[in-house]
Image 1 (tube, one colour):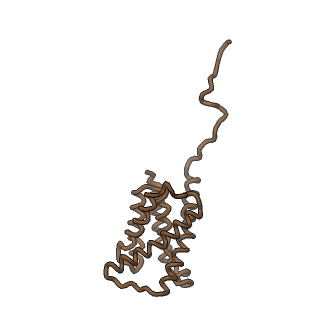
Image 2: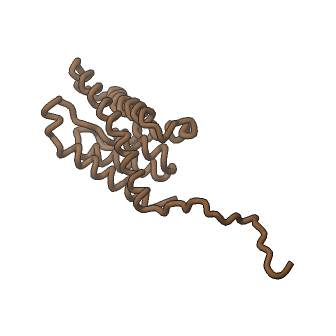
Length: 183
C-alpha cells in the first residue's frame, strides 16, 4: 500500500468538501450544491485498495455531513456501497477511457443522493422533495460526470511527475554470450 497516495486522496477529499461548502456561485446560479465526493470515490475504488476506499468514504462522508444539514454519517454508507461495488468489479472497468470515467461518475453521482434520500425516508425524517429536486439531481449527476475524469487526470499527472519512469529497452540483450580471448 502506498501511504502517500492515500494521504493525497484524503487531502483532496478534504479540499473537495471544503470547496463545495464554500463555493456558492454555482449554487446561486443553478440552485444546486455540487457534490464532488462520488467522483473521487470512483477514482479511489478503481485505483486503490479497500483501506484507502474506507478512509475516503468514512472521512469524506463525515466531513460532508458536518458542513451540511445531513445527519452525521448519512453520506458514508452510500459512498462506501458505491465504492465497494466498483472495487469488486474494477477488473471489468475501462479505467483509462474518459467516457467510462464519465459514465461511472454519472451513475455514482446519481446513486449517492438517491441512497441518502432513501435512508432519510426510512429513518422517519421528512426530506424536502419536490419537482425542483429532479433538477437538482440531474445537475448534480452531470457535474459529477464531468468532474470524475478530472480526478483521474489530476492523480495520473501527479503520478507521472512523482514516480520513476521505466527505462526503455537497451540494445544489450541479457541472453547474449560474450566471447573473450583468442579463438
